[in-house]
Amino acid sequence: MQKKEEHLPQILFLGKGERNSPFSNQRSRVALKIMNLSSGHCNISDWLRLEATVKASVYVVSFSFATFITVVIIATVSQNLKLRKEVRYILLCHHLLCISSYCGLGVVFQGMRALLANSPVLMCWVVFGAQLSVGEGILFTLALMAVNTYLAICWPLKYLSFVHSVRYRILAGTWMIIILKNVCLFLIESTNSTQTAVFKSEPLCPVILNGVPARAIGMVFLFLPLSVILISYSLIYREGKRAGHFNRSNIKARRTVLIHLVQLSIHVIPTLLFIGLGKMCGVFFFALNLVLFGVFAFAQCFNPLIYGLWNRELQSRLYRWMCCLLWCGHSMNRRGPV
Image (cartoon, rainbow, N blue to C red; front, side, top):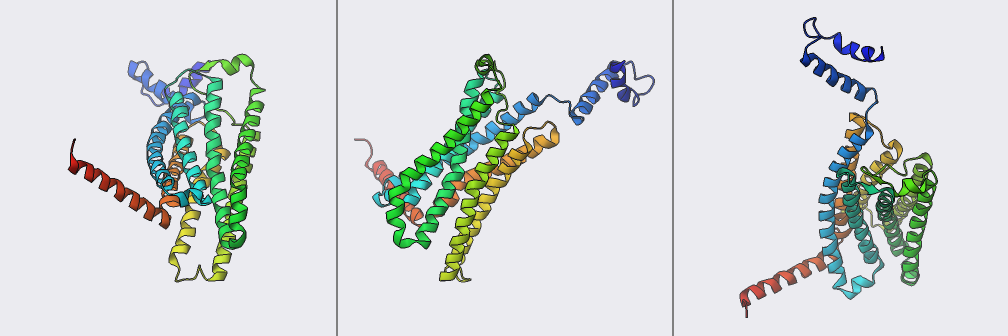
């Protein structure tokens, strides 16, 4: 009786001579599938695999671009002893390594899901946990860069002695907090699973850390560095305006602050919506998820350009380094084989 009722809406749209034809049966099955999708009774694993395929492709492009810029900037910094000792360049290289690692681990994790690699659940947790940690490291290094800039501008006399004495301890403490938080979340997640389920192989890596406590803690760890960044920028802007650095004639300083805030917004807003929405089924949520992910991936690609190549001193060093490489290559070509 229930089966007849399910097919009743499709049969009502068919003529008397069409109801028993093979084509009408096929149309009925397609219409029933569309109705099931619209009513929310769809198989979310199909959507997750399609989503993983698209995300893996985007991550490959982002990883290639971010890694190229990262290698160029780190090679430029490592060639100069003065730049290697400055805290802002240490944090910048740290930030760029986090971006490249995040995109690379995204390729691995989404690739396992797209290819149905039948990986153990524990391996999925390890890869996802590593990606989550370096992803949080991106935002935390941005917060440390903002604090470093604030101290350099507002406390120039005490900046060198203070920052150079605590730089590595602050970095180590930040990573310890991030890793400890993620380990605790995964331990809480594993309490709901048996040992057999943890080591069981799954064709599609399961969705993890999607519960309310994990999302709430994720929001806290998102708003914490975001608050530090916004407070640091507001204090920098107030100090610059008081000293005359942010007047109408200094367009570059105002533009730099504006670009950093826009970059930060397109980095944070998709993350907030990801955490808030979770995983839902349907065409609308699938399209919305991909749009948000595209905006987020765009922000990750342009982070190295904005925070790295936007720096005037780094631009001059990079220009000289590239000219030296081109000159050496040209000299080797003119000399020819020995």
